[in-house]
Length: 486
Image 1 (cartoon, rainbow, N blue to C red):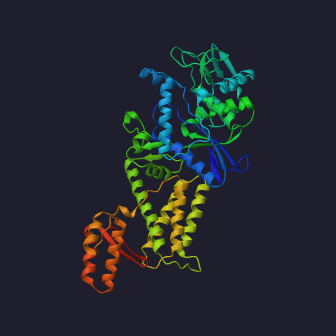
Image 2 (spheres, rainbow, N blue to C red):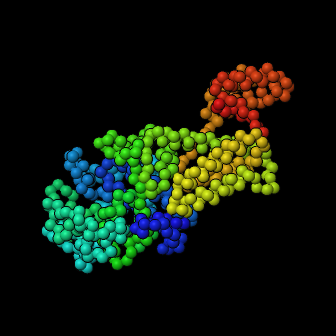
Image 3 (cartoon, rainbow, N blue to C red):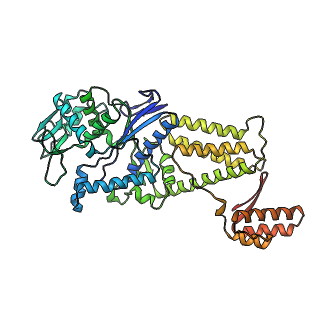
């Protein structure tokens, strides 16, 4: 297995720090609003990465934090005239509910910033004691130049950063590059007691403390959106490695940005969409299918036209899977002595799918293999030749396996979706007395088959035409006859 390491700027073999185990940390949301579809794309990407590790037999410990104290949360509370904690609680619940609806697996551990203040204070004290941080008037800053490795996560150079750095009017830090580990209390803000007086942690502080507490250091993978690589992830790493003098993460992974109709998503452009808004009108499976057709590191161009296309593709896949199940039930049971061409295509798809996923979690390539097997399955089913039950089941199970790995739920296709008018038709043509669409459908098929056997062509044609008038088709195959939508 290979993955692209953002800090090394190259694809490298994945070798777990501990055999059979993967420890992952992915930055969660700041809970001041509903997450948008760009956020959702990142959480989906790491959900699938986690799923593939599990599929490969790894024990995955997946930690994702919730930032429930932050400038944005405080500001939103002030705008609405409520406590910041109430804003955080509301959007924490919203986040958990909507990601569950989207099919995102629950993290192994979900720490919250407000519940980790103690470990953060301890880390800051240690950084001050070692000379990596300093206190000024109740604020604590990390001295960036004290970390000789600063810039290794993002590839940025301190001198280049200095050219664009500045000190805000209300800051007293020694160097424009230094960042806050602890912020002194301001009127109306939530605060906690600390050795430097009442205040709250800086945003970059929480993840470093949480990783050390819940996963230990180093971890196998630290992930997030590309916008977090600098300064957030750079600052996390600087604190952790300075404090505990061991590497923070063995691999860094970052997802590409999402655009809408080729433009940056922005409320001012009217193309800003939350995940909640999308899932109110579209299926989670279709959105997952759309997003996973683009490699996680590449920019994703979202449009409702593409989303509708993904929904149509999903329905075609579902129909193929249902048709394979039907054919397996009706097909000849004899198994050929040698592997058939179709069975080989199924095996090739499974192998190629795995190769794609092992190659930096290339879901775009993996889904291309799925679509290829769907096409091959339809050709096989429409060939008119006798089908093999084993081969149909192999393809059926392979498609469900591949989509299941990606967390894409296949919509069910039921025979009962046929119109209930078939019941009235069966009563008229065959004297049917029941209420089941399935039974009525089969009785019409049997009546037509008997008519043809007795060379009663007019009756057979009447049944066929009556079924056709309902927008249905009687399909005769080498493996039996069925009524389906035209």
